[in-house]
Length: 380
Image 1 (spheres, rainbow, N blue to C red):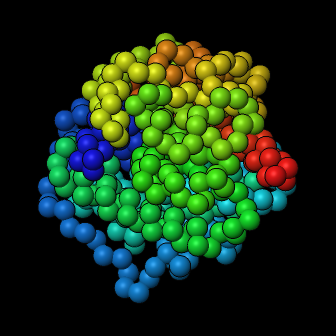
Image 2: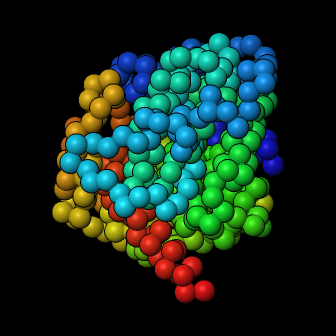
């Protein structure tokens, strides 16, 4: 199953990894660098070596976290100008950041690598911050797989992903140990983070005592087949606004959308029990409405984050893009989204901006689902 999971991740994240590299590493237009050159530059040539953690340091220590309640001024506390603070922490949020390690020198990121840690901090700032209105955020550092690991079927890549997941699992165990047991849980991730979150849901949380404490799981930027994946997860899909105890997922495309390259690779994969994903629909929860499969105009968008050139800050723009769930479950954002930078996948794929496009609506969505969960708990 581990080998199959690596193959699935490889095929789906092939395009995602290319654009993520361009986004972070310098904004070079996709048309200039071929995928073959990127593979040559970024896939490590060395054998996999399990990078050691710092001696004596565990996830009980703040050193291994970007954010948790006892870390003041962490990036997850950021708010863009114009956004309103929340109503105080009522939940515990576990957030897994996407890939930020771009080197071809190693299969996994050392935890003392300053560049990848800086980039990961930016992701925590721009993505996990959407949840700081409802809860205290726990965002671990982990020995993430380099994005070159997603461009190959080598056994080394599978080992790199397994190592990254073991760190995420260890961080989650500490999160569960320390998070107040009388508070609900919200899970969230993006890209590589959502890959690990899917595995966490399948292997660790399914059947676990804390499963009934989960108010929502945001598996963003990762496809979930309605028939090959969803039945084997511990939570149902979110079908309506304010529903609690369910899973959200979406993948953003401007129009005219051409998801053919993703469809081609995704249809060749199988779910965790071997069921084919070929021609199956993907879960699409519209972040503007909180409903599965529907549409909403730009007027429903409470605020998009428009990043600056070096991604260190963002402006806040309401009513920037519409959203509707289209064919196969891809989320369509219209023909004229705002300029977010030149970092869009072929086919008008806005994967990099899955959170930024709907930041304020995600914030409101988490508030509504948590309110439902707490109301339901009070009635028991």
